[in-house]
Amino acid sequence: MGVFQAVVLGITQGVTEFLPISSDGHLWIVYRLFGEQPNLAFEVFLHFATLLVLVAYFRRDIVRVLGSLSPANRERRVERRLAMLILVGTVVSGAIALFMGSVVETANSSALWVGLGFLLTTALMVLAEVSAPHVRRVLQAGELPVWKAVPVGILQALAVLPGVSRSGSTISAGMYSGLDRSEAARFSFLLGIPIIALAGLKDIADIVSGHAALPSLLPAAAGFIAAGACGYLAIWALLGFVKNHSLYWFAAYTGVVGTAILVWTAAR
Image (cartoon, rainbow, N blue to C red; front, side, top):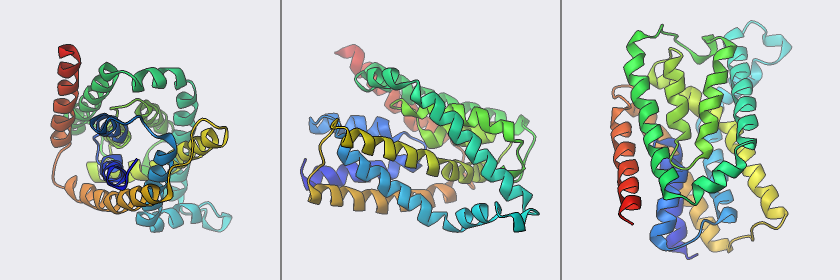
């Protein structure tokens, strides 16, 4: 893999990891445009770049949530509940994802699965927008009952499938629960920190076990920087966008991409 390809893949990862349009689905497309096979070891660098971006962008939220767990801060119930929601959602996502390994391998090798994944993302976001006016409003994620983290975790687990957006599915789940788009996006990003970290650790374990070789340093560094810079901008852009605009824009995009992949598959 050359530096140019690494930068393009890094930009793709950084933008599509946080916009609700599926990073795995777009990486699948870019790899095929380059005529390359997916590179697990290289993607570890991309995942950790996006993880560091999340931690940097939401560092104040992370400090507040972790600080609320101290016995001296028992009165900070909203933040303590948010920590519990993140924990429950992560456990549910991780448990389901572990049992989807064989399905994921099949999906990653099938254009049909990728196209359907994009269309599932479209459906989730459209349903979120349609149902939003009929759901009882909750101002902060930390005010949600803890059990509501279970469906959020289930939808997040589906994002191991290519074409299914992690942020799209969890933002939609937050809106189903009564959060407005902005708070649902914030909750989605905070919930993404532990699951992205766990996914990165799993990839490292696969490398250590000999399933993938380490990439060259220069392409890896170039992809890491590109993913980090574009990821930070993508978070900022999305949080600003959803304050005044619906998810229909992203749903339309993933709908077009998913349909195009299915048409291309049928034409072959």
